[in-house]
Structure formats: structure tokens, C-alpha cells
Image (cartoon, rainbow, N blue to C red; front, side, top):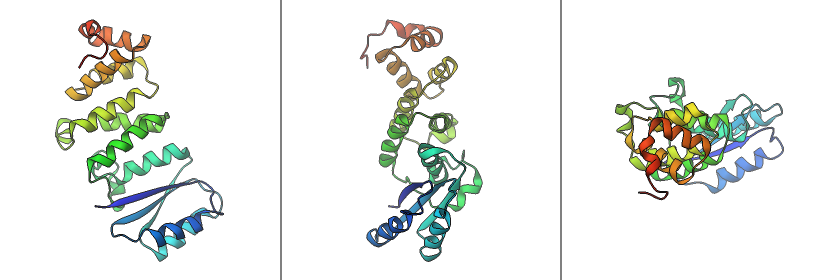
Length: 206
């Protein structure tokens, strides 16, 4: 099993050297990579990380414009996840692959739901927009967790209706049940337009 340890960094020149030394010395098991997500660093963080990368191929610097911690974490997942390789930019194929097991991904999707930002919402929408051929490579629990995570973001009425009209039954069903169990004015309005029959279902319906 491959393990990628993601380290977000913005202007960490005073800490990143000892952090990477500690990880490199303590994580000696095979199949471990240290992905340093550089969030538009303007100090010496990047050259320090690149020096570690030259000495240890397990260290992989990834450079981003200023996205914030949540943004660089999401973009790092996007680059390194083999299961979204068909929708991620092909230039990212050079980076290490991880998430070969769906169980750790489930935890990651839940975390993305708590990162309420444009980058998180964009990632989750892209994740749920796969066509049928791509979707067959995924298990239903992944789609269910991704739908729940997206509903924790700030969604417009059109985005709610898009989710409720998903061609994937597990996404559509999860969205309907979540909107019933956790009603808001905008969710009720979307349900009334897309699935009016569902408004007669009791909360907690399974």
C-alpha cells in the first residue's frame, strides 16, 4: 500500500527543514512519499524543500499560486489520485499515485466537506460529474460521501438542483434524503422543483 503524506507550507523557512528531516528519519517504511504543497512561498521554503527532494526522492515539491491551506490540499489530492486521472490534467501524471484503497478516501471526502471554500466545492462537483464509464470504477459509498460533503458547502439553487438531478442514483438519492433530513428554504424549493414527490417523505426516511 502506498502512503502519501501531504504537508501544506506557506513561508515556513524556519520550520520546514526540521519537519522534513523528522519525517524522513521516522517514516522508513516502503511506499511513503512526502508531498510538500507550496502555497506561493516568498521566502526560502521552496529551495529548502527542493534540497530535500534532491537528497531523497520521496520528497516531492508541488508549487501552487496562493490558494490557502484548504486549496493546496485539494489540488494535491487532485494531482495524486489515480481514480480521477481521467478528469485531472494529464500533466499531473508524473506525480506519485495514492488512494488505492477507497477507505482512506472516504475520510478525505468527509474532510473536504468541512473545508468550505471554492476549491473544495469545485473538487467535489468535478468528482460527482463523472460519466457512467468512470463511475463504474467507484463504489457507491464514495459517491454517497461526496454528495454529503458537497451539501455541506454553500450551494446556489442551481447547484442544488444539479445535484438532485444527478444521473447517478446513489448521488441523487443521497441528496434527496439529506435535503429532507436537514431542510432549509433553498433545499425545500429545489426539491419542490426537481422531486416534488419527496416532500411527502418523513424525515429520517431510508
